[in-house]
Picture 1 (cartoon, rainbow, N blue to C red):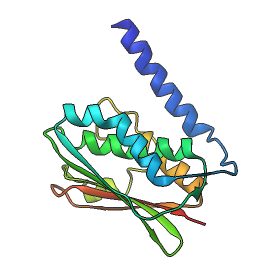
Picture 2 (picture 1 turned 90 degrees about the horizontal axis):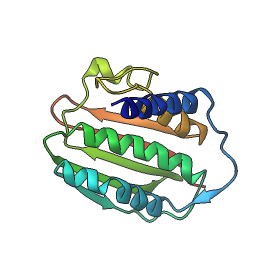
Picture 3 (picture 1 turned 135 degrees about the vertical axis):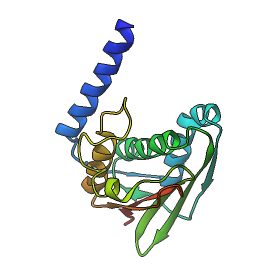
Picture 4 (picture 1 turned 90 degrees about the vertical axis):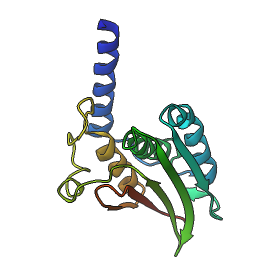
Amino acid sequence: ILIREVERLNGVLEDFLHFARPVPVEPGSFELNQLVREVFDLVRQQAINSRVELSFKAGEIDEIPGQAEQIRQALLNLILNALQAMPDGGTLAVTTLLVNKQAKIMITDSGQGIAEQDRQRIFNPFVTTRSEGTGLGLAITQRIVQGHSGHIELVSSPGAGATFTVCLPAG
């Protein structure tokens, strides 16, 4: 029990440090669709255990500027949140597309949705609806995306799932 608690506290501390000291975006580029596939590989077993069907529709997108590791962390945070929003199973669909020189990554779940009052504050640090959450995942995700000169859009209704759209410059 002590070892598990130390590991949990270490995770909280690491999340806080990532939020407090964001890593600057250095010049680089990455293949977005390949990155999404890698994140799916990381979460596949958790999705199976949660009875969540994963689907990925890859748009025609060349390499985009940015740091792959940071964007991987942002996508992983969003996808893990989506999986946790579907404790009784469901579907998680990710679509990438290129629109007006913007790479868009749409993450759609069939979960419980997000209440209007929560949508206004979910990107704030330390805001969480889960008892074991730290409330830093979405704050870190937003900071990473903004550090890449992008933004996140959210569409959700209680009981009808949620769609997070990460918009990043593509050129």
